[in-house]
Length: 539
Ligand code: GLN
Image (cartoon, rainbow, N blue to C red):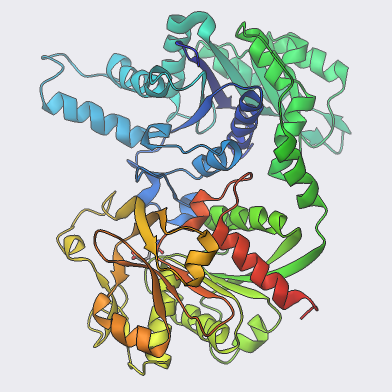
C-alpha cells in the first residue's frame, strides 16, 4: 500500500445509465487483480441525505453497508466485484455535504465568513473524497461522480475535482464515460455527442485523460483517432466499451482494451504481472455454461423496476454458478397473487423467494405465496418483510391466530406477532433511524441454519424497524416453526425455519448484500441447491 493514494475520477457524459458503476468496478477489479488495493466511492448529486428515504421506484434498491449506511446500489457492485466491504465514506450525497456545512455554520466554525458553494461546499466535497485515500488503506480511490456532465446538480462536484486535480497533480486522473451512438439511417457511429460532452467538461476546467466509449458496434482505428484528435487524448486512451452479455464480462472487456495499463501508465505506476483473474474467469465460464435451468419465483411489489431487487438477483447469479445452473427468475407481482391463482402462478416453480419491502401494498399476496410454499413443500426463502410475512402466515394458518399481523400493517391487530421494538417507538425522524447495518447472530446447533452456515456465530446486515415478537416464541416452536438464529445481546429472533419442510427459512436480515462473485452467500447457495433437487427430474 502506498502512502499517497492515487485518485481516479469517473465522470459521465451525453446520457445517464451508461454504466459508470460497472466501469468503475471493472477497473477496480483489474487493478486489484494486479495486486493493488482499491476502493470505490460514489458521489450522488441529489439533496436527500442518503437514498434510505427514496422509494425504490425512484432509485432502485437501497444498499446497506456493515457500518449501517443506506447507500446507492452501485456500492453493491463494488462489493460484489472487489469482495471487500464498503462503508459510509464510500457514498456521499449533496444532502450530506450541505448538512455538514450548515451544521458547521451553526456551530460558528466559519468564524463570521459568508458561507458559499466555493470554497465551503467544495472544501467539504474534497475532504470527503480524500477520507478514504488518507486512511492509508488504499493505493487507489476511484470516485464515481453521479449524474451527467452539464447537470446543474453536479457542478460543485466537477469544480471540486478541478481543484483537486490542481492540488494533487500527477496523483490523479479523469476518466470520462461517454456514448458513441450508431445512426441506422447513416449506417455510422457518431462522435459528435462525445466531442460536445468533452467540450462541456473543458469549459468546467477538466481535461479527461481517458475516454471510455459505450457503443453497440466496434470502434475502428479511424474512429478512435478521430475521437482522440477532437478530445485531446491519446488514441490508446480511447477505450471501447461494447454492450456485453453480462456485467461480469466487463472487467475482461476492459482488460482487452488495456484500460488498466493506460491508467497505470498515466499515473506513472508499474504494471507488474498480468492481472490474476482465475476465479473470475472460472465464475464466468460456469455462468455462461449452465448444466440446466431452475425456475424460482421472486414475489415482490416493486417488480416493474428490477433494480429494486438488484442484490437479490446478483446473489442468485452467484449461487446459480455454484450449482452450475441458470436461475430463471419468475417475477411475480405480490398484488397479483392470491389463494385462488397461487397454483397457476407458482405450480411450475422450484423455489419461492418473498422479497423485502415496506407498507401494506401486496402483503396478502405475499402471504398467499408463502402458504403455497409451506403447504406444497416448495423451497422457500423469506427476506426481512418476507420473513415477517412467513411468521404472520404461520400464526394465522397453523396457530389459528385470526387476524394476526405486523403492527406496521395493522396497528390494532389482536395478535401482533411482528411488532415495533421499544426503542423504535420513540423514533419520529424517518432518515437513518431503522435497525441498520451488521449485527451478530448466534445459530442453534442442529438446525438447518447452523448446517448451512457451518458456524455458530455469524454477522448479517439489517434494515428494518419491526421485529419478531418473542412473546409468541413458545407457541411457534411447539407448532413447528423454530427460531434458529438469535441476536446474542437482545434475544431478537433473526432466523425462523420449519424443520418439517424440505427447505423453509425466513431471515430478518439481508443476506443478499453480502453475496459476492468469489464468495456466494451460503443461504442462497443452499436455497438454489434445494431448488435443483426439486427440478431434477424437471417439474
Ligand atoms: N417493513 C419491515 C420493517 O420495517 C421490513 C423491512 C424490510 O423488508 N427491509 O421492519
